[in-house]
Length: 220
Length: 147
Image 1 (tube, helix red, strand yellow):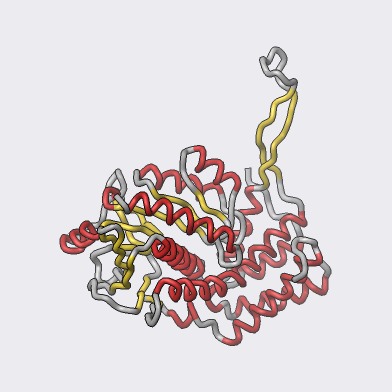
Image 2 (tube, chains in turn orange, red):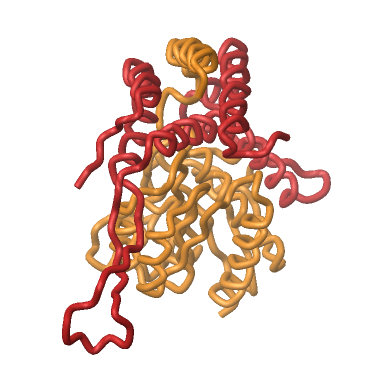
C-alpha cells in the first residue's frame, strides 16, 4: 500500500474511532446478522406454504417484530420479546431469536435462531421453564465475522450439536472456514457459509436447503 | 503456536483501532493472523512404510506474509463497514416479501435502535470515505476487480 493511501486511511480510521456509530459494539452487527438469517428462515417457510404471523411478548398478533440484543428466556417479560407464529401442515410452531434452550445435559444454551413446537412453547411460558431439546425443530448458530472464522467456533458448534439431537441444525456465516467445514461435516454436521446479501447464490442455497429440511421436519 | 503481526502497516492501523471502541475488530484481525494459514506439506515416508508412494502428506500452519496480513486487515474492515448496511436493507426486503400484500412487518429492538439502525450522518460520511479508500487498496493490490 502506498504511503499516501496509508496516511488517508489512518486519518479516516482515527475519525471512525472517534465516532464508531453502530460499530461501537461487536454484538450489534452480530445481532443484525441473526435477524437477517431469521428472515431467511421466514422466506424458506413461506416457500413451503407455511402461514406466519408476528406475535408480541404476550402472544398477541402485532405487525411490530421486537428483538432483543442478548439471550433471553421464553417466559421472562423483561427479556422475552416477539416471535413468529408459524402454522404448517396442520401443526403450530414458534420461530424465535436469541432464546435459551436446554440441551441433553439440561444446561441452557442460546439459540440464535430456533423453531419450537407451539404447545411446548406455551407450556414453558405458563410454567416459567425453558424449552428443552425435545421441543426444538430447528437450530441455527449464526456467526458474523470480518475475516475467516477461527477454528474454536467450529469446536463450539460441535459441542452444541452434541447437545441437540434434532434433524435440522446448521452453522451459518457471512464468511467461511475450510477447516471448520471439514471439522463439522466429518461429524455429520452441516454448515452454510458465505451467506450474505451480496452473495445471492449462497442465500438461495441456504433458503432452498431450509425449505427442504423444514418440509421434512415440520411436516410430520 | 501463535504467529505475531509483523507487517508495519498492519501494526500501525491496528494500533489506531486498539485505542478506540473498535478494539474488538483489532482483536479479531490479530486472532486471524496469529493462527496462521493452513498448508498441506508433503514429506518422505518412513523407511519400511507400506505406503504405495514414497511420500506422505500432512497439515501444518505457517505465518501469513506481510501482504497477506494487510489483506486480512483491509478485508475485515471493509466487511464490517459495508455489510451491516446491506444486511439491514435485506432484512426489510425479506420481511416485505413474506408479509403478503397489504401487510407490513416493522422491526424494532429492545435496545437503542437509533444507534443500531440509523447511523449518524457524520459516521456515514467517514464510513463512505473509508470504504472508498479500502476499495482502492483492494484494487491496487489485485484483491478485487474494479467495479
